[in-house]
Image (cartoon, rainbow, N blue to C red; front, side, top):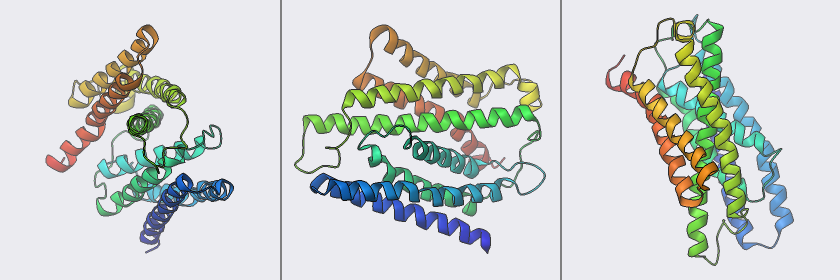
Length: 279
């Protein structure tokens, strides 16, 4: 019962904070009481810690249910979304770019859905070799890479909306207080660089230390193929940025293509194995 209440409490708090942030972001676009709005948004930022901690508790309860580590599709999605929300929340203390609180509402909504997935779709088969330190390090770096590149994809989508707003301005919009598009683009590439480095470490550890990480030699699979394709997309994007000054729509498209390919590599392979093939 305590476990179910923890899931429900985290879900309701995510929904409440997401609604509160969305409402006050809209209010900010049409109100002159900027100081009051800033206080309420700051309050929501600190309050976000409560559902994040509860979400972490549910992940621990669902993943460590026995001797092994249960890390099926639902736990994988929930972990990536939790890390995404946590990284985004933590960055608010270091990169206070005014207006980026617009993403709080969709991040909270996604986390509200993700926190319930392990409850309704529990992982039944624990992973092998989870006691190995190499496997734990590989998994941690992989989850960090996926989470940062998820944030990059969300940021790219937000930039798409901002760009359209510049060409078709509305009289009342939540986008009027966002940072300049160039500043958002600079932040996007900072995120991609960090995520790309972590993704590189993930792939290298999987290839070079396959025996230590997975307990078996490297095998060419759907996951491996799409993982390297995703790495190639982000590598080409960063090279294009350095050599040809890629920006704007080109950068956004490559970011989204790389992210979708990464989803196919990990989440897609797990979906096929667990849901379709029931393995």
